[in-house]
Length: 224
Image 1 (cartoon, rainbow, N blue to C red):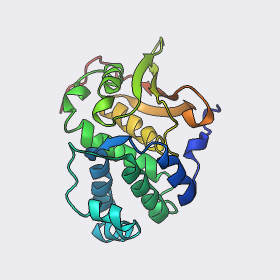
Image 2 (cartoon, rainbow, N blue to C red):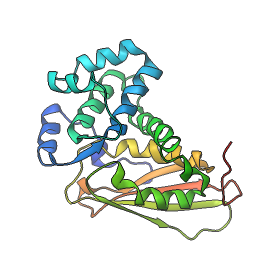
Image 3 (cartoon, helix red, strand yellow):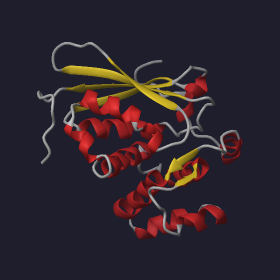
Image 4 (cartoon, rainbow, N blue to C red):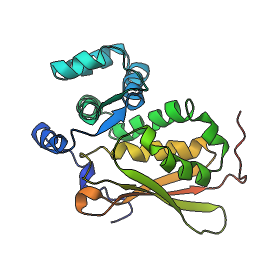
């Protein structure tokens, strides 16, 4: 896959296609922290009026769930997150083309800087290795591992590999680009670049995120 190309799972799909994809993974769930971060992003970055407008675009059942308290430690249907993301893209995608990456970056700031704040005291490789270990705390499906690369000089690289028994819904992985970019920055990495090198929905065995960054010089990142 070309370095700057996007896999098929990043391409927009119709609501009907999305419903078909979600029907195959109805048992998949995500932690409420992922959904909560979306709602906070909209409120903080675009205002409460935009948040309310986007919620009005969802069906009654989703809107009822999201207008109540979303508990960060509870499990919610993956479809709720996917439909919320789709509504956000529909409302803001024209003015913010990389809106899903922005959502992922915001999620990293909330979740890594909060519950997993201690992880950012490690070097980037250490964080990425541990992030694969804690992946089940955010979703009930798939498994993750980290493959560091042997590099010389200040340039570092590694790949986060996500294995799923079924292809995840389209655009689910797209926020991962922003998440990993911001996570690397929070760990002290400089100029991070994230490329999806294989895609489960294109027939690959795994979704693979290759991450490159410049070392800041130290193996441990002191907290401010």
